Length: 130
Image (tube, rainbow, N blue to C red; front, side):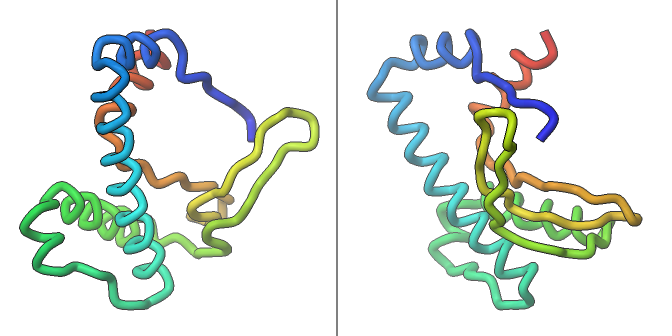
């Protein structure tokens, strides 16, 4: 881990603008969506069938698009999967977490974190690039 990024002022502003109840609702929906997408991405990596049900298609077109994006990324990069859901920590920094994918792409090691949250990513991007 070379960099740990704080959610920062923009994230706190976003929470304040939305209000506690709405921010919690959005966060819960994003967490559930992220869990479903992660489960399906991991199933695809392991060669298992993924769980696209009529209910998922009807109510979550964005999740289908996310899975299609993951499949395109996989086909374009042809990663050699080393581990999935591997716990990582840094001995000199107070940082730890589970990586979604550890792989090699063109001989280089990569730690991949699958992202699904539109609202939070937009806020974090503003914080990072400004």
